[in-house]
Image (cartoon, rainbow, N blue to C red; front, side, top):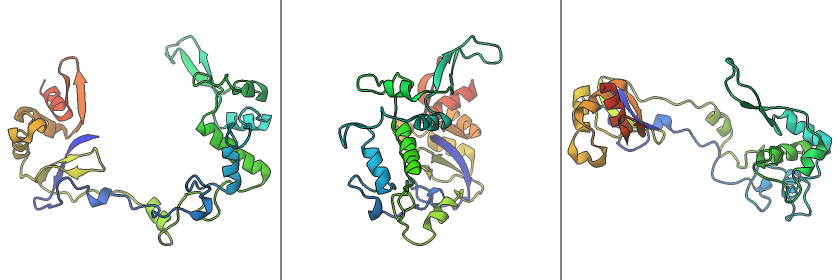
Amino acid sequence: MGREVRRVPLDFDWPMDEVWRGFLMPDRLDSLPCPSCDHGRGSSGWSAEADALDRAFYPGYAGPGWHDKLEQDDVDCLVEKGRLRKLVWREPTPDNPRDREWVTVPRSAAEVNAANVEGAASMFNDLSHDCINRGILVAFRCEKLGVPHTCGQCGGDGGLEAYPGQRAEADAWEPVDPPAGDGWQLWETTSEGSPISPVFASADLLAKWMSQPERGRNWVPQEAARKFIDVGWAPTAAGSAELGVRPGVEHVGWSATA
């Protein structure tokens, strides 16, 4: 996210502060939710069976919960998916300077369940469950029970296509840059990307525009602006011991000058 310089045609007239159309991905789904997977919590993309298992995972909503009553194959599934890893301290080596790493180790259902009983679970406990574990377990339980995991109507997306092939069209989409040319223009990349300056015939003219005092807090000394243009990109803000925290364009410009 930040600012970049683009070379565009001198007559490029895309409105300033408006995201370039080639950077806007078409909607994958329309705004209408899928009615088949709206189980009272919004369209989730889950089957009714999966939704019931998810609601019952923790105690309170639908009984005592099954988060601390896992079977061994449930735990094995989590381990296979890279979950329930163990933090191991180790002696650093030249090839691996880290003094700790997460490793996959076998886990028993008994130790995992004990770590998740009321009062034992903690964000600092590497066996505590989170929403990722819950989702994996719900899908695995559905598979064991022979019931569908995702909604049969929307395929798990939680919404319906506005027209046939909409998802495939969106999935195949790739961004298209604005046309190239001899002009110089400043763009923001905090959003998908939009022009924030007029098009100029030279880098020096763009730098002069960037240094105009009427730009307020976006004003940049002309020398720094010219150096930034040579670099071509800057983050929104940056800092260093020498320059302190400054707007990214100014920081890059002075860094390039130093």
